[in-house]
Image (cartoon, helix red, strand yellow):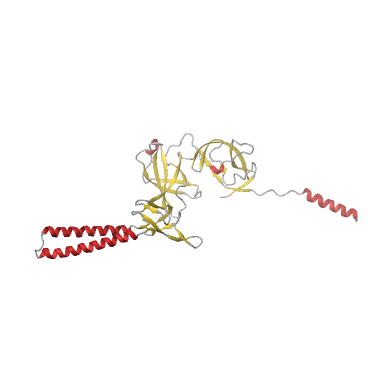
Length: 356
């Protein structure tokens, strides 16, 4: 019996030690397909996204800011309107303390009443030929001057209220309650982003191919799975004196607000001749340091091997940075898949799973 128990224990221990651990699950990653594989129809350009309309709302009169628009925040409490809030046309954004302007209106009202009474009296005397035409004209001049002063004082009082000139998103607020503002000082910046402008520059040899109203496709990292199409709405008549390029605007509808001012986009000019060496660019977060190399750079590529996706480390040489993209001068070819999200966690020859 003791021999049987010992043999059984040895078999159990051997079976437990000889079993292999299950392989780790594939690392989920997202990829960026490198452009410039010969299928492009022309050179690619980096562009910046700007709002369709942007207005700096300024005070016409000076004084201390007495009130700022209150909105309900995420916690349910009221707070001052701030960057990112949506405002409607005609909404009161801020008020300047109006005590002295009300006093000015009251003073102008009193002067106007006195001038009107004098003018009415002189008018009756003039009808009875008791005063001269010069006296009548002087009374009328005082009355009209008082009326103008009253209108100006009333307008200044109404200008103590700062209203939104359009529907839009608040980009910036530069005042607080108690701020002393001067006439013409901007208090808010509002942008209409229901449509956005994609702005890029082209050289003189290409500006002739830009046609107003032509359809242009645009790509943006903020909407990688969406095809964005717009129309060319402006071509600069003169080149920038510093960069010597012509600025071109493409207007794209943005009803859901996915595209934000300041984002980076890329586009390929339709109908342009392809360049001899199309630039290869990758997102900045795809670049990593190889293990044991403190000066070099590399990226991870996704390769298919035996029905599985494998991460492969590839040393690269880098060039200029444009927004959140960086140019790769050597080490990559068009059409290769570069790991973007998950690059810092990947290991060479590791199994990966590509996710959207």
